[in-house]
Length: 282
Image (cartoon, rainbow, N blue to C red):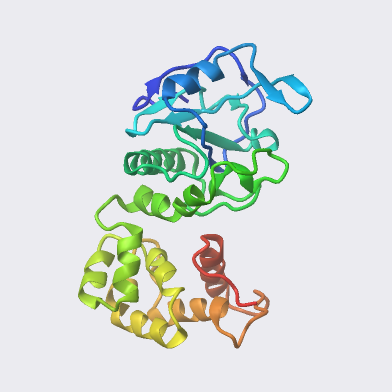
């Protein structure tokens, strides 16, 4: 697929037309390059050579997309074809390079462009709006999550930490950034938090709640009860929501397993875990 909103810079080398599966998600890379043109020139080079401790080595590298510091998106490879971006993950994931260097954060325009691209591809391919932290998981992943994918510093911890905000924006735009909403919840600014919820799905709010103490979490759920019960894709009661949160977080169930629990409650709890918004207690 060619994404018409992108600037088309289709490369002629370093990809293959066979082997691509239905994507499980999108993998973030950092290019170690100052411009999109530099990325394009490297990807389109039929004789890519890198220097190693053992001397020069021939490689093949590419990605489906690239995003500049100003948010401009270039497409290098048709999404039906396989780019050479993350070795063993090439067949399962789409890939996006970014102008910049490991250790940097993505710029605000890059965040917005990546959020748009991730949301667009998610709509097309149906993968989850989730944090992918290991190969095989659906959602927004990163190069170094694959131990055998090479480049263990790509894209760097600062960019990895930006993914929650990127997913947030991909689903609900910029009306309330993820970080700002979290501040509302943690500061117990109820009016602002509840106003923010009008355009947000329940699991984002629970992501902020997950950082609170149990008593504070219950108070947040009570304050937002009316909104929580009608959010997109979540028609359960506040009691159902609270139970799912407690299944994952409470010290009373540190070794939680799905066995014996109602199917809908298990599904809620598992989705919280998959999104990376809750973590089981050790």
